[in-house]
Image 1 (tube, one colour):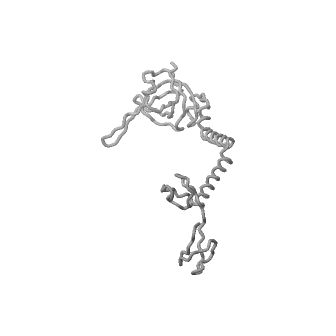
Image 2 (tube, rainbow, N blue to C red):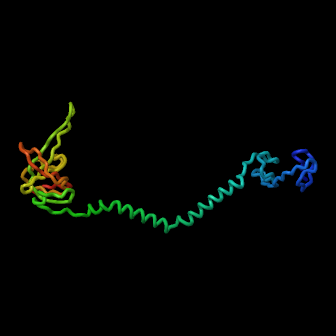
Image 3 (cartoon, one colour):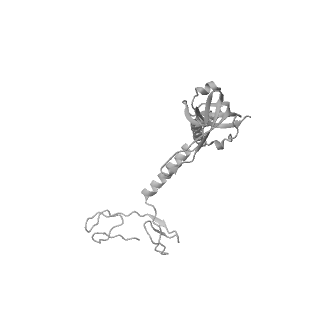
Length: 223
């Protein structure tokens, strides 16, 4: 049988005493919570850190408030998962992502599906920058220039020139990559876009021409 004594004066207390008969101080009531030793199974005090029977140090259990907080958090997470993370909602999210991706890619898709417009020399005299066009012309030659400063000089840039009627088209980029050099006078088929509406003066064959800059996607020798 457990015997309790007053913490203040040491007077022996009755079992259910509320006040000490010696000093009159209110008696502290300790909750008689128990647990079982995880090693030997002995019933021991809830707050015991060492089992009095086997001497094994025990881990302190979570306080009620901490345990309640953990349980509450787990419960909320479980409720959220059950409520929102459903096959239907996942499908909706996937569809939204697909739609947004298609909207963002729409300009590129439309451009890729847009056919090249067949044009003639009159159209080339008044080009629409950026429009996809195709036309035939005669390979006229090439133009090149270089530039630099101090002791540094950039590599010479070369461009092919195609004559369509009385108009000249200057193909952007290194002409060596177009495989037209040496095919002067032959017909060339071009597909691409005009880079700008105005004409640019460029040197060619010891003379100057006024031609339109053209970004070619396709350059084919017709013969």
